[in-house]
Image (cartoon, rainbow over all chains, first blue to last red; front, top):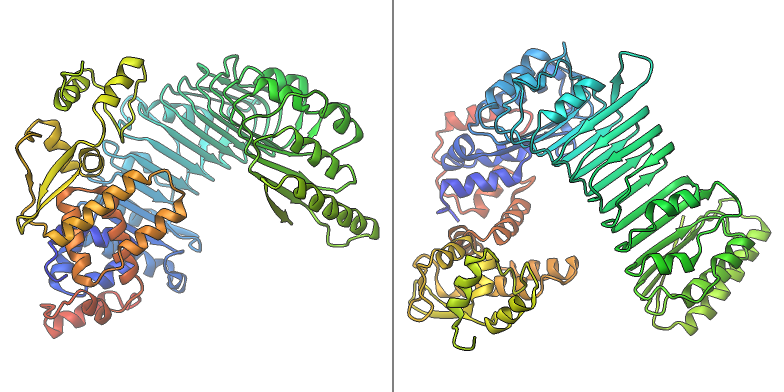
Length: 419
Length: 193
């Protein structure tokens, strides 16, 4: 092992990533020191890696990071993710970015910088492939001379940016594939808060904790769209029907439009949402390639509406995973289980309750009958801390019915998850 | 059709820019499926260790994992009928293990993650010298996933350890620093030490 070539040692140190480990390892001998100086390509300063970072004062930490970075050359990936630091000073951050700008491909940085630093201006635009920024602000984007020809993945968390700048930034990345926006602070010039983004290369978009009047996304190649904890009046996806994976979680949106052509949808995951069933059905009924459908903790706008198995079976013959959790009422049971079409390809069935009622086990039984090739059944239940006698009785009855049921369906593997 | 030998089939497919990956074809028109069946993935290539021992292995397996071997086959410098690929820096014991790794991962790539990880852990249950040999071989043959696996293992061996412990693991007898230099190292990063 003492004969390893210096480049290989550089790779070993790069896999170590964490600055403390890299510094210690490079102090073992001159060859390792040299590997650190000339062949280290990945370096990370993360409060998760080494808890003792928080014992240092901010200026001491700045010096530590500076001297470690300055001993390397050709760094390709730099992570500075410090949870307990309020802010770094602009001059130090500028030094780090300028030192690495020629070779840096991945930058992860989540510390507020004072005074504000134009990170887009400073970091090497020509090679940057991944930019992951948090707690900073971006302004004055000039797409004409500020282009990011290699940027594939952009993630902005708790970043202050105007809607216009966000639009310009996305258009300045001709190869962008993944976009992540978490709790952005979107400054608007007029009363209506609208974000419009357009990219023909975007494949995956994740938006969390955003509150807007209008969000319009034009993405001809999009495959994966995930909205979480958003409050929107209008969300519109303009595309060419390439969407494969659509997920919304705890979103309130008045007008949702994911386009006419949805033939490529494979996964639809809706949770904590109020569904207007006819509209929703119209949206996804043409997705005959659907493989996974999850409607979890959903409510129906019209209390009499149900998700009926007959519709699911006829519209989605390729369905392999079905997850349903909503308030099962008499109506749901009766109308929902009407018909005789089977879900031939469903191998995993997940059913859940938030408040258990005596109809639940009948519902489980009814669905089991319609899944002849089922392999796994997962029951999710919410059990309240203070259990009333009635609830205990219902739970006991449910347990009994499940045991009886599983005796008849021996080819199905049951799992229970209670929270 | 039956007159066509495997090499011609391969070049034919290549000319149509269809890359057989792991035995499957990108396009699935009947003619291509027929060709795939004809050019069965059991075609073997010969690898020659530094000890001049010859190992016969499925071409698909090595092409999938080793960038070097893939390039050799692609640019036609490997003649299936006659030649063997000489690997002068890999001994027989290590070459056998590398072939083992590639073969398992090709044939079991649909297994679940836990099973594969368990197999990998067992595979890397070797001594320091063995690990070195595997690392050098994987580096030379440019086998990305094996390299990542080995680097990951080495990382776990070093992470959180003290300098003396690391020196022992890597058999570093002469570190080359003067006592003043060692003292300087300590002073530079008092917090890390």
